[in-house]
Length: 283
Ligand SMILES: C[S@@+](CC[C@H](N)C(=O)[O-])C[C@H]1O[C@@H](n2cnc3c(N)ncnc32)[C@H](O)[C@@H]1O
Image (cartoon, rainbow, N blue to C red; front, side, top):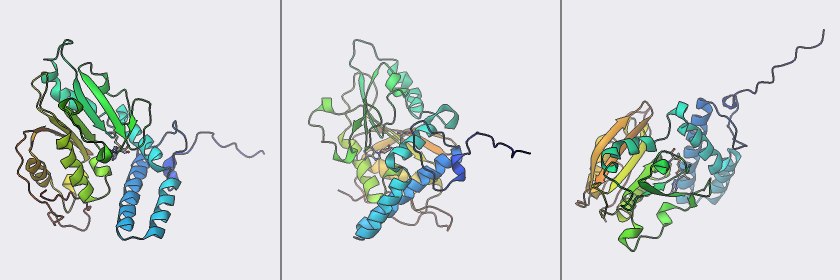
């Protein structure tokens, strides 16, 4: 009797470790997507620590592991899958829903509101399809012609109000930054790119999305601490929303800051917690 032919249905990538995305059209299970994203973050963090320790051999070995996992491109593909409707969807829909009352004031005779989308993976998300918004998209690795390859931390500072933005989106970007000081610097830098010179009654706005574990399950960051950090920079929380995985927040910049330093200090002890932290000096 001839051997039974095996089904041609491909197995899930989650059954292989480490998961690697080879083509832009590869399909990853939800679990494999999460594993790939988590592993990329862990490798970035380990690389930063090796760099800080001056261990060049370890840096090279971690770089090789990042590449073996498919690099930033595979990470972005996994993140894009996460943006699909069935996996939680496009976070910019929440941003647009929240500012809809103000956007309704907008008329075609007015200039569009400038949005800086840091960590942009798509030119077709909800904010890009909103007629009153003009979106400038940047990412460390551009996936499409409408996305500029640029590190926000290296973007030249604006020299005029017109070069600034009414809204900055940091959706799942702050948690990508591998070290706590860099995260504080990123939040501080946002202030320099925001303008209150707006054609409608929308204050300068920061849209922040983080994995909920960053504030619920970290030894060094809580929602309260995040609020204190952003308040010290002059931000006021106006909207917040949670899903089982993500926390979405809308912050208005008031212009009234009270510089304070925030160290990495134990707020929430527990051996099962993570080490996500934001450090900020007073300057
Ligand atoms: C998880 S993806 C988030 C994608 C999308 N914003 C979302 O909400 O699904 C994080 C992206 O942030 C980008 N990124 C991280 N740090 C950045 C920086 N300093 N400047 C520009 N892009 C950055 C990464 O390259 C990556 O594509």
